[in-house]
Length: 148
Image 1 (cartoon, rainbow, N blue to C red):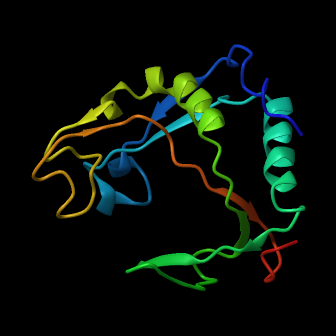
Image 2: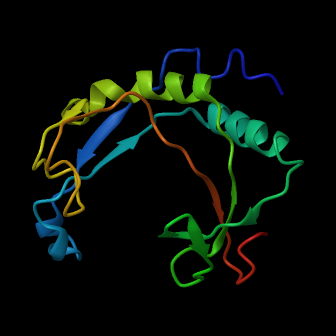
Image 3: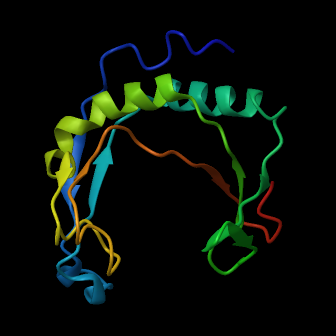
């Protein structure tokens, strides 16, 4: 499948919801940053992206592992019981970023101490400038296999 025209149409009507963790079942995250962007993709674009990702792996979804640091991964079914395809396409990622960057202006430049930087060390010494998205293609499954 060619991706040359994928995500080149105008975006659907994107909506933004800011998460106030103090008002959720996760109050321990109060003061941290999260937003939900709905309607970033049309249903047809979503289907086309899945098909394009599957075309890179002959339709095979590998077991999604959890990064545990130092280049190592571990199977943790209680956290990530799903399949994944790793597909890096800078042009697609750039098109997605262009769609959403106006809805997350607070992420364009992350200054030291920014609440969007969660780790203790992150952002303490320098600013970070967002230039693109990082994508993971995951497929959740109701069965233990995670790969249905």
